[in-house]
Image (cartoon, rainbow, N blue to C red; front, top):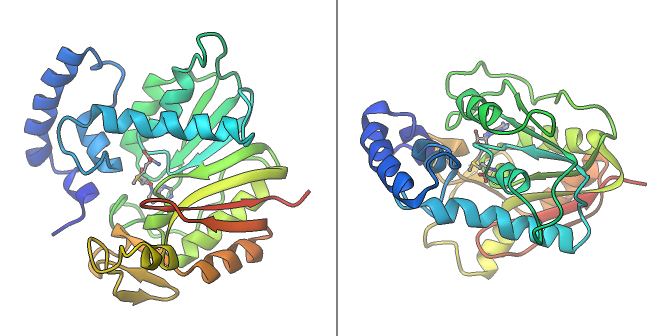
Length: 272
Ligand SMILES: C[S@@+](CC[C@H](N)C(=O)[O-])C[C@H]1O[C@@H](n2cnc3c(N)ncnc32)[C@H](O)[C@@H]1O
């Protein structure tokens, strides 16, 4: 069974789903705001192929309220989202009028390997505060047509970002790409600034009794454990010790992997 993101590129499968979704979106009054259903399915919305509007929206709202609450970002922060997809996290910042008064005045940069989702984002976000950049890397799941390239050097200046994050990206990256993105994160973060990447941490999945149910991660691929040998990037997990060592090798400090339902959060800082 091919991974869902691969299926979401099938016009035959997606045309009827997109058409049905358009009717629902018009009835709900959200047809202009949300990306097409095929993109919402591609980035994952609670495993729903229809009626996923609320699932698509709600993750971003809770995420930003928590980051503001813990002081990781301010409303004028410079933010880098690696694997931004169709702008789920950008959309909360763009539409935000927290408490009805204040709005995001910083700069958000989203990078991804999927040019179609990036094109949708460029057409739907104000370009003065939101940039969307293609990274030409190959993933058998997300960018099967791209040439296999070296881990990306991002077109982002050194020490320029107040917060770097990814949601459900490292769960699709083999180890060279994890190491490459951690090095890039260390390079672009301002001194003392924070990174937060969600990961599948094998130790946390074991502790939560989640191995053997939906996830097995029974195949090895270097230091990674993968679910599906035909589509290695479909789901990728690592031991906590390897993740923490990878952060240290990249030059990040105070690294922790925090257990959470579903995906754990790997948090670290750039040295001061
Ligand atoms: C599960 S989706 C999550 C998207 C977004 N973070 C969200 O939560 O809505 C994974 C995203 O990572 C992107 N991706 C996969 N491999 C990548 C890579 N090597 N570099 C950058 N983005 C990548 C995919 O195109 C996809 O948009």
